[in-house]
Image (cartoon, rainbow, N blue to C red; front, side):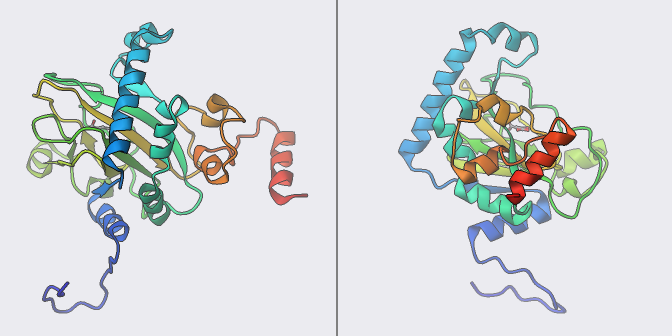
Length: 272
Ligand SMILES: O=C(O)CCC(=O)C(=O)O
């Protein structure tokens, strides 16, 4: 690619791969679209899995509780019930992006199936928010990323996500005129991830079509942050012995409940 004419430049970024390009875009704007690299059959399998879990969630023992807390359009932690969602959480392109931006040792904080319902005014993710809610700070590196997998295409008609570009670099929520002038709706094809710096202000759009718009979000964080659900406790010790998956799911970062447990964890880590 020919270099764009410029002058006075002494320092310039280089992006030689799609991941490097996405990482630079995320640093600059706080969002980027990344192709997951899945086959049509894999994408279809995830859609089937999503529908099966939705049917189960509509009538299982937690259905009433979900409705009471306004979570009827959310599927919490689908990877616990279907290995296809575990593979999605471990997508190599997203893990490479997390490695580049968060650094080694990041963990999965949460995975949720999200439904933007057909012909709806709003849903749980419509109001603008940060994925580290109630936080107002600027950090030089991302502490957390959200990789929102598009099971369906994200379009202006079905409520693609609105973002306020570069708002991860400002502490405060923008003023109303700036928000309205600068917000941008990000369209993305099915099978891609919309990746967000967790400090960017964003919200789901209005779905004006007669079909639900389905997505699966993944929040990855530095290991010091508490997971939404304690995944090692929820999944159980026998869930996987794969070392990389155990690191991703937080098994390598147990929270000791006593000084003895803390010392024992340290001794096990050092092999002493
Ligand atoms: O559904 C969307 O478009 C936005 C999802 C969202 O806000 C989130 O995952 O935090």
